[in-house]
Amino acid sequence: MHDSDHSTPRRQRLLSGYAFNTTGKIGLSVILFWAVIAIIAPLITPYPPGKMVDWDYFGPVSADYWMGTDYLGRDIFSRILMGARYTVGISLAGVTLACTGGIVFGMIAAVMGGWFDTLLSRFLDAFNGIPSLLFGLVVVAAVGSSIPVLILTLAAIYMPGSYRFARALAVNIDTMDFVTVARARGEKTGYLIRTEILPNILGPVLADLGLRFVFIVLVLSGLSFLGIGVQPPNADWGGLVRENIEGLSLGAPAVIFPCIAIASLTISVNMFIDNLPRKIRDRSA
View 1 (tube, rainbow, N blue to C red):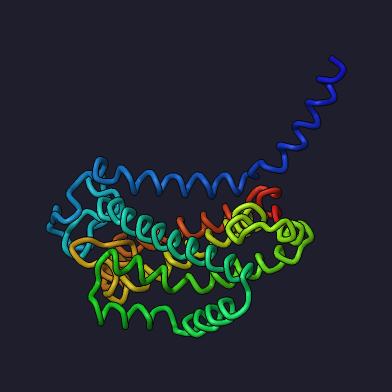
View 2 (cartoon, rainbow, N blue to C red):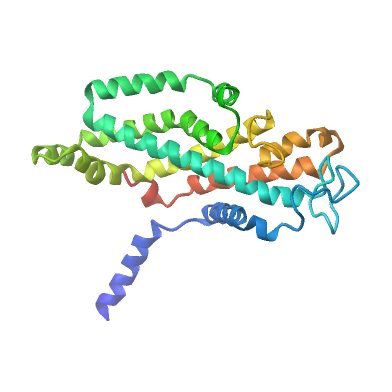
């Protein structure tokens, strides 16, 4: 009984470092909400997203049309639900490719060093100097706009930054004594990366992944706003803003609600990242 009394507070102290605060829980809840919507959107849309259901363009909020109608009389609520599939899905796929490639190459460059590190770093530094929207315009003009092209373009835009971040963390870990001891034992590069480097940079790179997800959402919305993102009749949230921009002077819900959707997702991701559990965020310390 005596041991149990002492172990309970200790266990609570250990777990408290992994607990989310209220702000982090709110951010995570909104992220999960949009993730679920992206999966089940076709099952819950009240109207077909491409169908003209109202003769009144830029119609107001009503019992039939919860977020009004767009410039063609289509239900904007249904289009936002379906747009979540493109905004969340494309952004998630893009950030996964970008951060996976950046982290892997960053760790390899840090451990191997030499000419491989120099050449790869200089190449990605040069690539990182190209403005993201300009690069997107060039790619779309060359090969056309499609969802695979958008995913690969967004991944290419943000992989150099992820590489630099992961490499900087890995270089610091690579100089530590336990890595030197592992090298002295004759461990291979794969072992050093998998066992010694990755576990010690995992927390910061997860936080960086969240930030790059926000950037990718905004860049995707910008590309769609310029007309080179998701193509009609489909639309992500940025495309919905572009389609209905003429209703801005009228205060049309068709413009306002897609902007709110973009803001809710990006702000929630930031709230979640800023309030990651302390022991996850500081794992490499």
